[in-house]
Image (cartoon, rainbow, N blue to C red):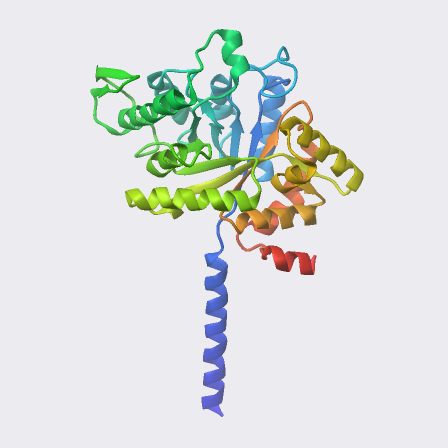
Length: 355
């Protein structure tokens, strides 16, 4: 009798241990909020940032544009990195960054200095989000050169080399590239985060951008893609990582998306039609690449992204048309807890069956 009891007890312990291990194996899911500094005020942004911390978001972002990225070009638009300095002092817990900085706007040495300063202002909470730059209208309006795609990527590559060298190397630093040159340049202080703040690279180009993600980034940001498309890009990134001997699992994969959290099918359809028109895609394509529907539907959609490797969801809050603070609150209350460690996190298939 005691032998049977011992066997049963051991079996139960094994099952419990397996369950705990399975729970621990689930990816850690993080949540961010991008608050575009357009058609808003500093005071309103401060309110949103503080509420985002209270709601439990992990990261806070601005975008980096000199003109509104969407809507009337003459509408108010604040400069992102000076806004980040305010964000650093108005918050205390969340990581902060620009998603993503346009490499065409600032010399990489100046950007490295700015980023280091904000890392100190935030007590080590900065993420350097950076990309090649793309919006032609703002470059044309302000007389800023927008090189060819090839040259932009070449400059971006050199900028990443230069910034990481300034952050990591003992001063002085010399650098000789085709586009940038440093001669015995001192760089102090160093960032608080060592060896340097995490770098997020935005973009999905398989030939040039993803190899840079593999080489330099701790985070990768993907905009406006369906899960099956992300799976293809992920394979390309994994290949780029293998070629340099890097573990691709070390790179956090984030997804920037609008959020339309509503139980009204007609309202959801209207919003999808608007997004489809702006992006120049079909309504069905738009539906596959954004979070839209009631909380249950949004959780199901998120799981399809998690199934292809996304572990960081960043909600876009931007005027006009994408500024639903009540929706963000509902998302934090009804959606985020299901994906936190210890929450109910099922596969997309089982979600559809049980909810």
